[in-house]
Image 1 (cartoon, rainbow, N blue to C red):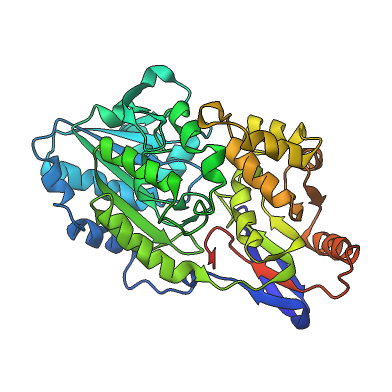
Image 2: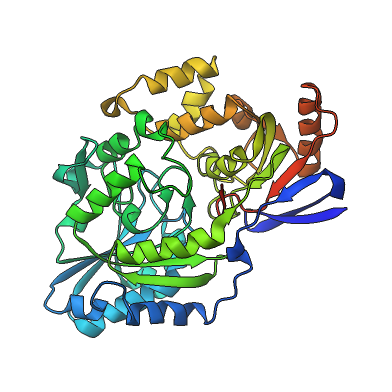
Amino acid sequence: MQNFSIPFGKGKVNFELPEEQVAGVLVSHAHEYKAPKSEAELVADALANPIGSPKLSELAKGKKTCTIISSDHTRPVPSHVIMPQLLAELRKGNPDIDITILVATGMHRPTTHEELVGKYGEEIANNEKIVIHVSRNDEDMVSIGTLPSGGECLLNKLAVNTDLLVAEGFIEPHFFAGMSGGRKSVLPGVASKITVLANHCSEFIDSPYARTGILEGNPIHRDMLYAAKVANLAFICNVVIDADKKVIAAFAGDREKAHEEGVAFEMKLAGVKPAPADIVITTNGGYPLDQNIYQSVKGMTAAEATCKDGGVIIDVSNCNDGHGGEDFFNTLKEATDLQKAMDQILARTRNETIFDQWESQILLRLLLHFDIIMVTSAPKQMVEDMHLKYANNIEEAIEMAKKLVAAKGVTDPKITVIPDGVSVIVK
């Protein structure tokens, strides 16, 4: 038997499979990479040796204000490691600089104070100026041009009306932006709902280039680069993390050059070959990324890349925060015919995009090819309302999956396991 321990919330789910049933185990090499220094030292080195840019302390000189865009509660960015050093570096160059931390919620719910403490620690959460971006607050936005796609580029005025714009984040595979980090802090991070909806339109989500690990030719990435440029994002500090959410590499400096080096590093670690199987077990990497069904679609897309058409995806995600998006939930719940629901989305222009449409579109794409079983803390009725199947535990899910593929004539199914679906690029 082969034993597995996969992330679920802040804990683990353990199970075993007969060796002969396992088609493959797809794991990012980031999880075995041994960092040469501590987390703090890696970030310090990156800030001391910026890529394509002067040091942050130099950029701070002569500036009255600085806005630091920071990832929100849905991202496992180790801000408690990065943010203190960014603040210190800025004040080293300019002790009087007025700093605002702008939490990049994108289209997510606002981050709570408790979550801010968890991200930054008490000292920063209680003493620094922190503003939560709310994409629906039109009065907080300012227009700075037109995206390459034709959508209006509206960004939070705290990001635009500052003397120095900085961003912290992390680099990992992303299921339609190609890779996270860099420019993504601006769009969708601190963009208006109008701009996000245009950028996440059905045409772009449907593009074969809007996939995990692809930047070249990706129309979503192209818009994001433009937004970061016109916002004058001057400096980034992005990290790569392992399965324990620990920093294993850091890249700081120019918004594009530093990001490109970080992407190249992550691509070498994250790339895995598919192991085609009738059943694929995946996760969303545990907390905080598996807080809801909305986020968990990411891990499902890793399974999509290696599951045989008509097969079964088992998604092991805590989802203690429920579905994660009212519009996302309602689109699936109200879909009496999945193909018709997909056709309706594809017929919408970028100016007709509705909230959470992209997530609905991707989940519908999956459901049209696979049965999806969730092992989750989310309510059973909620899961089933979204055309997903519910299992109380991993063993029950595996038995359900075997019955589903048996009904299609597969009597000896192979199973592929992806312990962390958001950390791999299946290619």
